[in-house]
Image: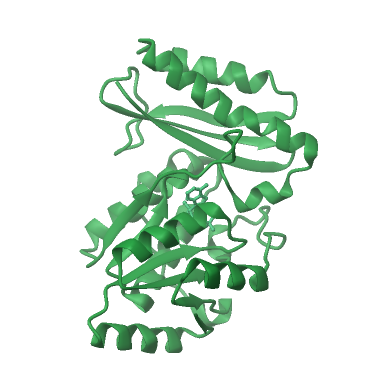
Length: 281
Ligand code: AMP
């Protein structure tokens, strides 16, 4: 696996791949890799000829009081993990290379960026859209792989790709979970033993909603109230939001008819975790 540390070198390698008519798969990440990331790498290897994975803890998507400084990092372990997973290239740029002095240009996906997580994390999706657009331009992939765990993120990237006529396919991969249901996340590393147990409440609450919907519950407010009740029964959990929305517009829905995205963000102690489920009514 090639480890590429500069934007110029990554562009050159991708140019060479294109010259060889290779289909380029790209998996953007912030590192501290887990099986969820690896599932994207595997899907890329299945669908593309070469797979590039970026690791970049993107400063512009963190708020001033968020965890940019302490976000977990372990390049050595990530490199070994990707090597094993069969990635062709790890792109690990420096922040000053991605955002040189004088940097002023940002991508915004208006409307979508201000809902759900965007409400509690102003500027977050502007940072995400900007860095992903830049990474797309550097790598110029044919296929880009994202996890459904970050449902709002992949919707925003899809919208941006369509709106800006980006010449690539956005692929959404299913959420990878621990055996007890907790969605894998680099931030799970923050959880102490009691918090780790408490964190099960997120997926437990969504599974309750899934069962209730399967049993015929169509009222979105009742589903949200039921989810909140499961979460509120967990003393270490503090709800940021629970919403039932249209998966295309992220506008709240009153009823489960067609596809409905139930998305939530919950603090377990100081750690903010997200999860979601797509219901079909
Ligand atoms: P991150 O490193 O957290 O920015 O995530 C990089 C990519 O991995 C994003 O597309 C995430 O949606 C995806 N991802 C993170 N956790 C999971 C998971 N548990 N299952 C599937 N994809 C995931």
